[in-house]
Image (cartoon, rainbow, N blue to C red; front, side, top):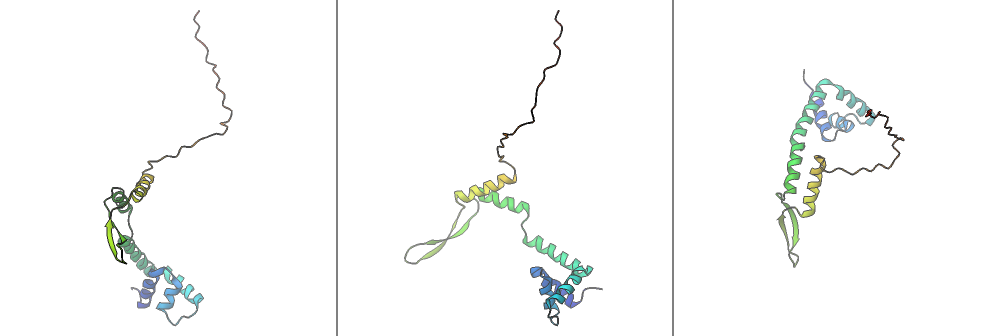
Length: 148
């Protein structure tokens, strides 16, 4: 059957900020009251076709826009190794400004190394236990062999 134009408009608007009330009022401008729009939006969000469309679009957005774990780890590694560059504004006197490309400084590289270390659990915190361990008593009641 397919979605109506208004349902698609609602879904596209909803994807902007996930605000069903606002999206419904854009797609159905004759609705002025927030309560009516919120109720109708909730009903539309349960519509199988609308829900499927929104889920598919969210997945596309996620795939295109969101860094995955591998990308984050590769970036942190590049920063730690000093292989990246960032733009910094430099003043060169008499009101002159220029943008320089520079590798990460020691502090930035250290932070990247720390984040990678946490990811790989390279650092363990020493835990001291000063509490009572429950009155453990060791009893040596093993009979000695008879040597006589």
